[in-house]
Amino acid sequence: MNINQTKRKHGKILYTVIILTLIFIWGNSLLNAEISSYISDFFKDIILSVFPFAPSGEAEGTGGVVRKLAHITEFAILGVELSLFFQPLKDRNNKKYINLVFCGFATAFVDETIQLFIPGRAGLVSDIWIDLCGFTTGCIVYSVIYIAKNKRNKSQETKND
Image (cartoon, rainbow, N blue to C red; front, side):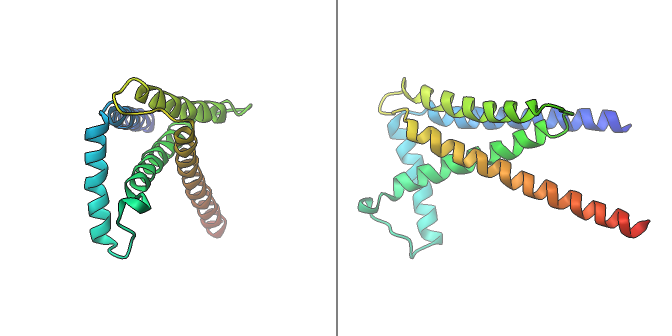
């Protein structure tokens, strides 16, 4: 298998992973309030068993915190995936970055719009911002790793010369 075939194969795998992530994100938004709360409570109980010192009552709103952390996490993962997807593109006028930002915003916007039509759910502008914070975090994590890897490779090339 030559390099181009390998790159195409990896691109198809990454594309599939991105689609599965979108299905996961939007699939969770399609759940009604009762099921969504049950899932949040399930993960809240797991988190509290791992971190018993964390506040546990409804007064502290840990269910809401778990939901926000879930949004941040899933969008951070999407940010890493889409950064990987757009990185190989040769781009003289930074269109790949515009596309990256657009994909993050569009995903968050669609996610919250879906919830407007689900019983007991609400699409909130504040949740779009939370999603975008997660997405941006994922993009930054990817960028830091990418830059560090390139610096390391360049320093190794310099040593070998």
